[in-house]
Length: 493
Ligand code: AMP
Ligand code: ZN
Image (cartoon, rainbow, N blue to C red; front, side, top):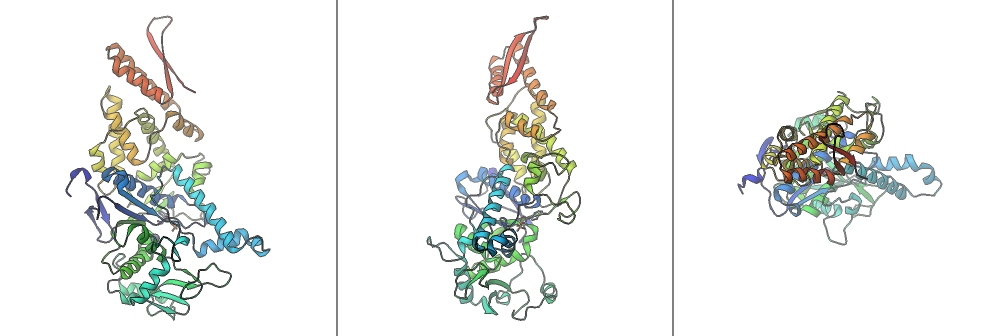
């Protein structure tokens, strides 16, 4: 249990404190993160939880073993915003009978989910272990996994839900400790709810588990009539389906604490009769752009694909590695201001580290780095640590620092890639300084010449081979005038 090499501390929103992390079952560490609602392209704010929890996923895999971590991130493909988008984009086809609403909805969700996958892959995020879609968990399933209708039925049977005015509602008064996560007091909740009093609710904070659909709206048959699920029940169903009734970590953005996560907890605990849903609740802070809340009306709303593929922000395309590094330079719980200046700084650092790191094909575990990162996922300090390794490599002739740097970059999600692929991405990002790459290679050449002069052939050859593995071919020759040994390089095709 107290294995120091597995040291991980995480801030738990449930207890408002940093706690030592011990998985319920070290052979299967289980994490659930709320994924995107697929009605529009993901914006750079949506990228934050995906990147942050990707780092945690990678760290857990290094601490507990690759096969020992199960990461579930859902896709919300049922939502009234999706229906509205389908009507907007395919209104004519629907009106003329060319497409049914369901087909139009499917087109919207397929296209948006496909783009999301491309976006987050470009940001260096691994695929989660499972990525369930809400629409596949509404009705009882052939594989018998937990579904939403089953959970709602359970809640009614156990006295935690009631039917009123065509809706099934969760009865918050039936749960004495409702509100533990957000710690909102009852007065606040009632004052907030008084604005829009729903006469059919027993209590203003009671929330929808199921609502009826009109014939035009998408719906599923249920014991309460043809309808669709409320927003929160899907995550209770999909987490139980893949992770069980109680699991280790549940994550998402700060805005999800209330009502979404509070209500997930209420549903899951009351349906299963458990004390907790997840042991640790983690929330990332919000992202702003150039000091302002992102919004379409302010014109400072940027989708991930826009930042990657167009020159609308700061006049250049930003490689996914740069967006990722810029995100990780701020601790996940802090607010982050995305600005051109920040991206330019990240570009310099990314260039420096990736160009150097790509020369070392194999990583060597760096436990000090894991300790730094393991202090509540402190990516800010972890990146500073990697920069100190970088300085050691630049100033020492050799040593194991390069392989340690490689390891750290892998854990942070800057996976091994060739100099060419990084260079071409950089080149695509207009105005990038190519001189830095030359300088790095020339430094390696100088080091190799020094090793040759010291007759250390083995290390000299290693540098040559490492560069070759990265597609940089060295050519030895003699200066025709001075007769001195010189080395030139070219990119191997
Ligand atoms: P949504 O698709 O709106 O449900 O959001 C998906 C995820 O992105 C949730 O975890 C949100 O908390 C998160 N999110 C949305 N906007 C931002 C933002 N500006 N900064 C950080 N996270 C955000
Ligand atoms: Zn959720």
